[in-house]
Image (cartoon, helix red, strand yellow):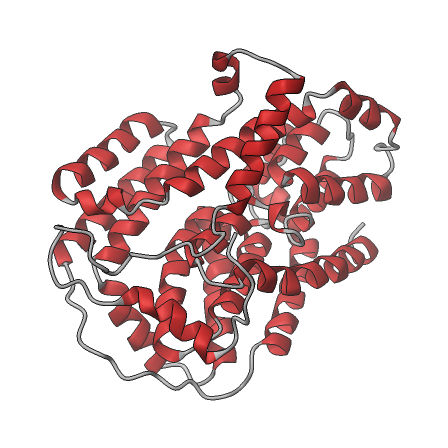
Length: 399
C-alpha cells in the first residue's frame, strides 16, 4: 500500500494533481494522460505480503495448480476486471476534470463537499453495491482534490466509510448481505427493516466524523494550467459498456460481458488496457487463495466449535473480529454455518467492514483507486476509531 505522508497538506494534494496532466495525443504512446496514476513507492506491499503467505501455504499444505485456481472467485475477479477497465475509460475521456470544476464551483467548503460526496456514495452503495459506488466516485474525488488542494486521502477514507454504511442497508448493497438475505428467507423490505437501526447508527456516526475531520474553510480552486481535451466518443462508449456490464452481472453473464469490454477497448482504445491496475487484480486473486487456505485449517474449525456462537453478544463480537482478520465476505461464509442468529451475523460483519483495511474489500478498492501517499495511514486514523465507537453503539442500541 502507499507509503505514509501527511495527506492533508497542500504539498500532498499537489502531488496527487501531478497525475492529471492533459493528454496531448490520442491513444498513442505512454505519455501522461487523465487516468495515468503511479502507485508510488511501496504501492504493492500488500501484494508481496499475500504472495509470501501463499508460498507459506504451498509449503505447509501442498495442493495441485488446478486446486489453487479453484480457490479464486472468478466471478468476482471478472466483475472487478471489467469495472476497472471501464473506470479507466471514463478517466481517460477527460470528462472528470470538467465535472470536478463544476462541482467545486457550487460547493462552499471542504466539509460541505465531503457531506455531498459521502451522501451520494452511501445512496449509490445501497442501490448498486459498494464497489460500483467507489468506481464511480473515487476518480471524481481525485480530480476534486487535485483542483482544490483538498485532503484526498481523508476524503477517500470517508467515502469508504460511507459505502460500507450505505451498502449495509439493502440485500443488494454488498455480497455478504445478498448471501444472508437468500439464506434467511427474509423479504426485501424485511431485510431493510432488520438492518435499519444499525445502519442509522453508522450514518449518524459518519456525519459526526465528517464534522470532526473536515474543516469549514472555503474551497479555493487552483487555476487551470490548460484546458484538458475530452474524448466524447470514449466517454459514451464507456458509459454504454458500464450499463451493459452491470446488467450482465445481474444476469450472471459475466464471462461474455467481460469479453466484450476487453475486446472493445483492445480494438479501439488499447491505452485503457495498458493502464489497467493489474496489480490490484493480482492482490485480490491472492487474497482468495490465502483466505480459503486459512479457513480450511482444522484449527480454525476446532476454534469455531468451542466458541459460544449461539449467544448474540459473543456472536456479534466474533463476526466483527473475524471480519477484521479475513474480510467480511469470507467471515460471513465461514460463520453462517455456525451461527443460528443470522441477523446478528449480518450486523456484525457489516460493522466489521470498518476498522482495518482488510475488513472490507471495498476499503482496498478505495485506497487503490485513490493512489495517494499516506492513504493507508490516514484511512486507519479515521476508520479504527470509527469501528470502536460504532461497535459499542450498535451493540448497545441494536442488539
